[in-house]
Image: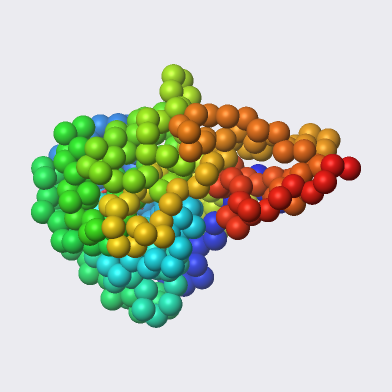
Length: 351
Ligand SMILES: C[S@@+](CC[C@H](N)C(=O)[O-])C[C@H]1O[C@@H](n2cnc3c(N)ncnc32)[C@H](O)[C@@H]1O
C-alpha cells in the first residue's frame, strides 16, 4: 500500500482533458508553462488574470488541474466522512478556474441529482475551457454548471450556497482581499452549509488556511476537517499542517511537466468548516487526525495525532489491541483516528 493515497481523475474528466488539450497543449519548455510556474511559485497578487488566454488556460489545465482536483477531492472525502448523509444542494466555487473543485464535488456526491453549481472566476479563458471540459462530463450536474465571470476582490456579493469552495485561490489575492473573500464565503454559506478552503501545502499556503480558519471560527463556524477541534491550531513554529494526494501522471501530464515518475504527490493544506444548524446535526469532527506518516515497528504502530483536546500527541498502538492494531497498520497520513466505525471497538485480550 502506498503511503500517500492515490486520487484518480474521473474517466470522463481525463478523457475531456485529453480530447481538448492533447493536440494544443504547450510543451514543457513553452513560455506559457514557464510563466505559470513562475506565477504560481510567486506570492504576488496580480491586477489582472494570470490565465490570460486559451493557451494559458490549456497549460493550467494540463499542468495543474489534476493536482488541484486531487487536493480538493481528498479534502472533500474528509469532509464527507464528517457529515453523514449530507449532500449539498448548491455548490459555489470561488476562483474555480477550469473547474477542478466542481468535478471533485460531483465525484464526492455522485449521482444524476448531484449538487448544482456555479463557478466564479475573473479569467474568461479559464471559464471557457472549464465549460468545454464540463460539456464532456457524464454527470448532468457538471454539464449544467453555470460559469460566471466575476472579480473576487473587494467584498464580492455572493449567492447563497450549501457548499462554498475556495481552492488554490487565496494565494492570488492581497491579504485584504483574502480576508474579504473568506468573509464573503462565510456569508454565502447557508445554515448547515460548509466553507472549504484549500491551498498548496507549503508554509505560506498553510498560513493562509489558518488565517481563513480563524475568520471562519470567529464567525461562529465549527471546523469539521482536518482538525478535530475549532480551537487554536497546535502546529506552530517552523512546522505546518499539510497532507498529500498522489496523482498518477497521464501522457498529457508528462508532455507538460516532463519527469520520469509515473505519479506526483500534491501537498495541500485545507480547512472545512460548518455554519452550525440543519445538516450540522449529524456533523462532527473526528476524535483525532493522523498528521504524519504512521511509523510501523515490530508489533506496534506509532501514530502522530492532532487531538480533540487541541494538542498534538503520539500514540502507540500495539498488537495486543487486535482490531485497532490492524486498523493502525492501514492508517495513513490525513486519516481520522480511530477510523470511522471503530470508535466503539474494544481491544482484544493481551496475547
Ligand atoms: C491557481 S488557480 C485555481 C483554480 C481552481 N480553483 C483550481 O483549484 O484548479 C486560481 C484561480 O483564481 C482566479 N482568481 C485569482 N484572482 C482572482 C480575482 N481577483 N477574481 C476572480 N478570480 C480570481 C484565477 O483566475 C484562477 O482561475
